[in-house]
Image 1 (tube, rainbow, N blue to C red):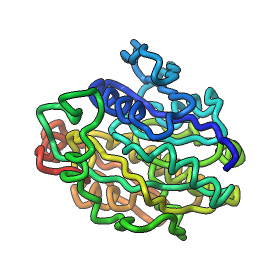
Image 2: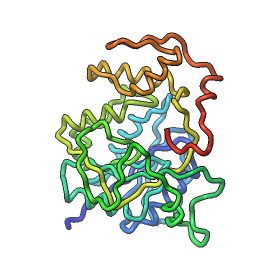
Image 3: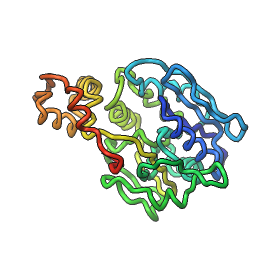
Length: 295
């Protein structure tokens, strides 16, 4: 197989322990990535190991609210690999992640590949082996749960996906060439929501082919979720309007419909009207307990 360089890219604001675990997972790869790009959306750079096991590069991306699309673009612009593997800071990749990412490109040059994700419970300690600073994959495999809306990829190598709405920013893999053919992410989306769905549309127009990727698992580290995410109310509404202006259709309908039921919005086929913003009490009321792993 022809050698292909690969860059793993992640974004971070806070989440120091999550980042430590992600890096431990990358240090444990059967094939070490050529580089790790960390786009940090905070004033100070995160602490990263300097033991030489990984080539880590830090890119500062400022802005409020969190500039997710911009940060992914800056990370991709800086990356030197011919393959880009985007991995959220919440994820711990299993030891096959980088190897399977490279192998996937032998299947489809214009492919975008989504690995399996399993969600971990809340935990007071870390997820590392006591004897070494590596993830305890036996425990991760025992406790990780697949999202009920996602398919079971056990025994599956690669499987096509027809709906580009499945594109998941949590973990996805593609060539640098395809990323640039699609134009990267639209930075008109700022803050939480819709930038990934928009990018799926851009990839489809660029001739990409979407696939599930088996043979590797990314373990999502627990953090508190809101159902619905009222803490991102303004960003969701703004980005939903941006998506409609771009594509003539709505996204995030499940959240927008919930906001309507709560008396926060009214909707027509082509417009959203804000009736009021959620109160702090309402936002806090959507906060889920430690037993809830995903929204």
